[in-house]
Length: 242
Image 1 (cartoon, rainbow, N blue to C red):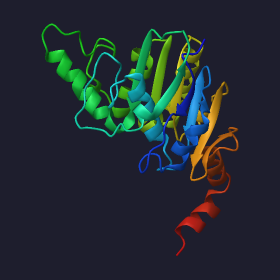
Image 2: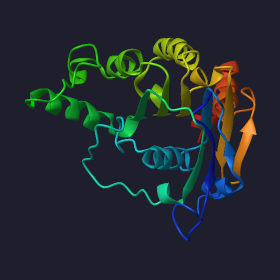
Image 3: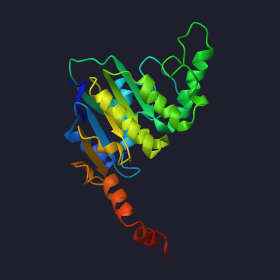
Image 4: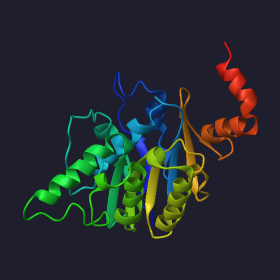
């Protein structure tokens, strides 16, 4: 059973973020897949805004983390969260995590700080036993996915591919499949056509026209990448010529 079935904009205000077409489209409601829901679209179309609003509404730390470790190095505008209505089921997740790629460094630093505090649970206990800063950026991301996300959970991931090579994105795809089959529900904002290929999912494309449900091969990340790889010489000529 999923934990969340739909999101709806309960009351739209004036200005940001209601002036973003995709956010405004939430007035009609947005179905959430029982396993994986993808958000795709160009920068500025509202993917991160929606995901951060959902994370705040759910009670996650705004810069990455779960419900029990709340921190922040700056105040983020969470005006969307109070305006969202979440249709939850009676099921309750055992685990949860919000990954915000933009502020992952701050999260890793907070785990280091927890490690130095007496009478606190280890900041490293869920991350392979050592600081995330002692790993490469990509390895730190992958450690979170492999070690921290334990299953039977509700996970919000904002651009999980940000630090991952194509090979590591495929490793993430395997982990995504494991989590989805372990009673987990994930909402993921991504630009990666590799991650987006996961079949048991819904893909929503956010644009200036609002929100549209699309197939994998009709999605913007697949279309752009496919056109480039099919004829890189022609695309480069078109892009780089005066």
